Each structure stands twice: as structure tokens, then as C-alpha cells.
Image 1 (tube, rainbow, N blue to C red):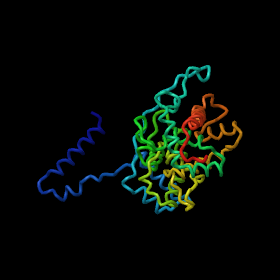
Image 2: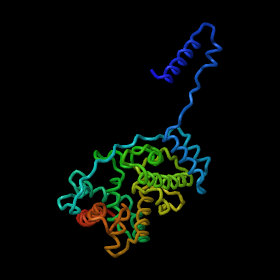
Image 3: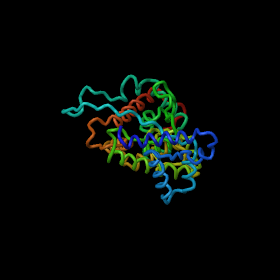
Length: 319
């Protein structure tokens, strides 16, 4: 036994005797250990995030503080690291299938197409306005709505089309939760900056539109609403009622906001421009992506619904 270990052991014994000696209440109080809570890395990151948000000119620090003190603010457990994908020397494999065009996803099923037809009948005015103002056809809008949230309809494949957790909790978790062993350094720093930017915009929009942030579900990246707008795109949102208050869960607001977004990304009568605008909605590098699954799925659905409506016209539709 080392001398230092013996001294530590002796000290522990003396402490125990002092605590149990008859009539030693005062001694117990004087020797009572003081528990000092050591902040975890996640606690420090959370404090750092709150401090950074409070320094943002567009945000009210009092509002930010209230959000961070709200008991509904939760930090989620990080998902397990994604499995490594095998490298391919020949680029995209010819036999790989677009996941949106699989039978399981059901993009081109009659039920799927009928949902667009029903949506057009219910929101004809907003769709007409989207075409008049932004020149985006209803079929393209349907394609995005179908893939993003399936028109907001819960299904067996996607029982929570808008997400299961509040968008604010998703973004705070993205910033503070411990990275996996393979998600550190610059990669984690980039993720934090993304989360900070999106969270700043989300909180600002919530203050302006009087949203209860803990009642707004979102994707793991904080995207919300029928068309899954990320907060950094909220500035492109359009209030159909003209009252300045945007509700991305409202179909009419979602339609006009989506059309406005596509127009700002170059959507016009040129088919190549249309492809690039639709691709930009998903994000990525158009010229370096050999698959373009999302873009192809939206355009395929738009073409299919265009043919479907010829055989199954929407009643009273003037489009």
C-alpha cells in the first residue's frame, strides 16, 4: 500500500468516526461534505448556446432565457453513428433504385395521386395564385408536398409527417449533444454553426408570429410545416391571408411559400432551370450529384399527376 493511499484511508476513517461519535452533531455539520456539481460538456455547450443567442441583435435575451428555462426544453440522446457505406469506384451503380420510386414509398400509386387531386380541389385558389405570381405549376407543388410530408396525412410509413419532437428541441440537441467518436472537430463545429443559425431564425420567427415553439414539431434539422421549411428560409414564407403572420402548417401559406422559394431559385419556363430549382429545395451540389433522387421524384410525380388529372379532372377546377 503506498504512503499516499494510507494517508487517504486514514483520513477517511477519522472522518467516519467524527460523523458517528455520540454528541457530535456540531462535528457532523462542520465535516458535512459540500457537493460541487461539475458541469458536463453538454451543460457547457447549452450555456454557450444561450449566451450566443442572447448576443444576437434580432433576438430578445429575456425571451431566449425563458425558452431555456422552460421545462419542456429537452436534449435528446444522439442517434447511433451511421454505418459506413461501401466505396464504389464506378460512381452510381446502375442497379441502385431511387428510394422515392420504390413500391414501398408508393409515390406513383393511385392513392398517392388521388391525394394531390383532392388537395387541388381544396386549395385551388392558392394554387392558381402561386402560378400567377411565381409561375410554378400545381403539379410541381404537389410533387414537393407529396415527398416532404405526404400532404400532412399520417400513414403507416410516416405516422408523424411533421416530426415527433419540437423543432426547438431538435436544434438545441443538434448543438449541445455529445458527438459520436467519428463526429468531432471541424465536422461537429459545422453542425453547431448550422444549428445556431437555424435556431436563431426559428426563435426570431416565433417571437414575431407569437408561436409556442414547444408546440411546433420539426425534423431533426428543425424544418417545419407542410413543405418542411428550414428556419433560414422563413424569410421567403408568404402569408396567404395578407396579415403578415405566416403559418407553414396552413396549406395556402405552404403553397405560396414553396412557390416563392422555387422562383427565387430560378424556376421559370426553362426545363433546365426548373430542374435546378427543384434540386435546390432539397439541397446539395447539382453538378456533382449523379443521382438527384429528390429532383427526379418530384418531376416524375408532377408528370404522372398531370396525366392523371386528364383522366380524372378536378371538379369545378379552373386551372
